[in-house]
Length: 359
Image (tube, rainbow, N blue to C red; front, side, top):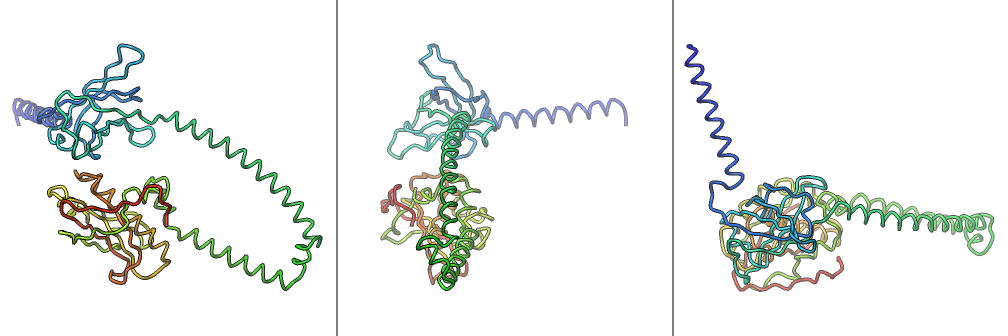
């Protein structure tokens, strides 16, 4: 193989790598697709840099092109973004831009919420509302306040423990009515048996309470999240399309709401993304085994997790995706099931208020 051939081959390979790099970077920064510009104003950008991602519905659909400092101290930082034309049907004048980060200290990006159906579409060069980013320092300050409060509570507990110790000493010595009762062996045995049974019940509840692991792994604050998009009952009219899934095929364990195979839900997400609908209800059921109250909470949590998957991975009007946990049903397979019910336009639902206490 001649030297000239090797040199020519090296140059061709280098040009191919360079061209692939140009196309990859261009695709990432939307250099080869039709785009439009939007702006948003923030009190501060919390470390956001030019070239950062802009996400719509959790999907990378744009890039931060420019960040401009304010002219006067009372003005805000002006962020200019370039977005793919395909987002025009989702982003409206009432959409909100929020600066988020990957984890607590990861890269910053801008998340733009879907607008409402009746709001006008944005035009090239429009400015939408920007929401102040959550700062790590704010979280640390709140943590410090919680620790101070906790310290005061511990001091009170120590004082209470000291008082209880004094009372216990008197009881052990047989002083007072309680001391006399405890020294009666028959009464003591009955009380002790009841205490042991209570401890066993509490231990079982601690190990089986599925929401502890669910909230920890999914990042939800409390059981109130289950009510955010829940409806009180299914719509009166029949669904025009239904997707039915066995719970054991999409969830990790029988008593949790953690997804193990979310790709199973892709057919439903694709259908909703490509078709018009009035409202979608994610309904979850369990079989007839287990505690009724925990099964009801489990189905509410499962419906919420499936809804979150659909909203985060497909271009949908999230305000039309509702949930309902229906608990036990004698008509479902072993382990329960999840249904995604698609209703026609004009369907109405009865929303549960956010303040409603968990059942």
